Image (cartoon, rainbow, N blue to C red; front, side):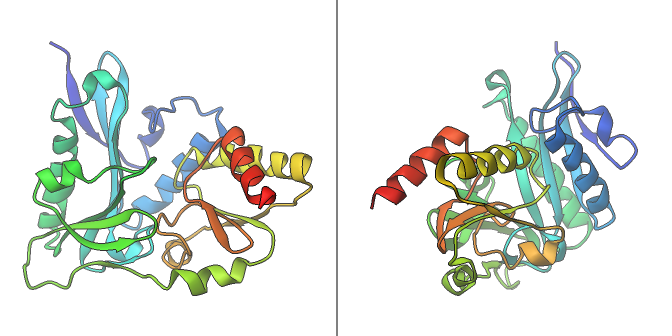
Length: 258
């Protein structure tokens, strides 16, 4: 029988395990993610790896106390899950997602917090809400286009978490040109940043402005509900998660034909 366990990482051992499908430090995005995680440990973040003796890191969960969360939400007093994932299809629908989730729930209870919260969406890139609804989370707020904020409350009288909102006025600051808001929270962002910046200039003659968030306070005031990544063209969000060059050109071609 395959030995699968949950590894509680720290600043000393985090580099020994892959995460988010990356295992090699030669990838710039993964290298930056490792350094980002090390800094977050000092803010109370946990990064736990679902580890297979056969396959290595096959999943993981990242969570942090709400006041330090890298999501644009009001959520003090809760633990916030940034991401939770199982990569190989072979290991999905086996209960491992619930095991990872319980790690977070138990830690939040030990710290006597009000509960656990997570931003989900029906579209791509982020976790869907099914796992959380199954484990007694409830939808407490929504944000465009299809983001939902879910919470499990230990104290029924606690204030619900909520999105910071005010999206339109926040986006008005980016009415000129192409802007990419990025961070090192996700290792896939670095690839999108480099490839799309090059494509924007070579294909459309547009110099993309990059705003790199380096702290949770900036992220909590992001103009997009995902928080750590967003692309805007003349103040309009064109994508709220990292995309390929091909997807970017498809989007821009449609916009410029109007």
